[in-house]
Image 1 (cartoon, rainbow, N blue to C red):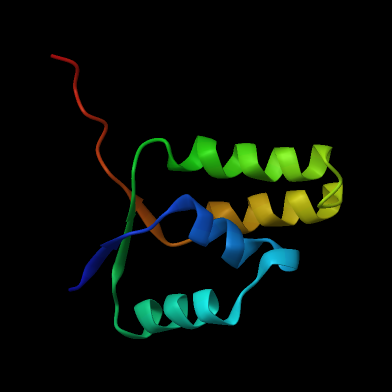
Image 2: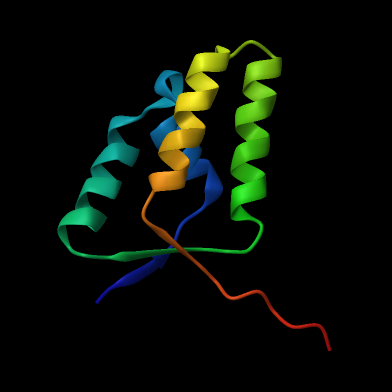
Length: 87
C-alpha cells in the first residue's frame, strides 16, 4: 500500500471552506482512490487546530466554520507517527 507524509497546510486547505483548492482536493481524491495511507508527524494536530483557532480569532472563519473544520479533522483519515522516545 502506498504511503505519504501529509503537510498540515494541505489538510487545512482541504478542510477550510474559504481555502479549498481543486488541485489539493484532486490530490486527496487520488490518494483515497489508490488506498494511500496518509501519515502525519506528532505536531500535526496541534498545528492544524492552532491554525483553525487563529482563523476564527482573526475572523477569517466563523465559530461554526471553525467547529466544522475541527469535527472534520477528527474524522480525517491520517495515521500518526509514533512519538520519538527521548534519549
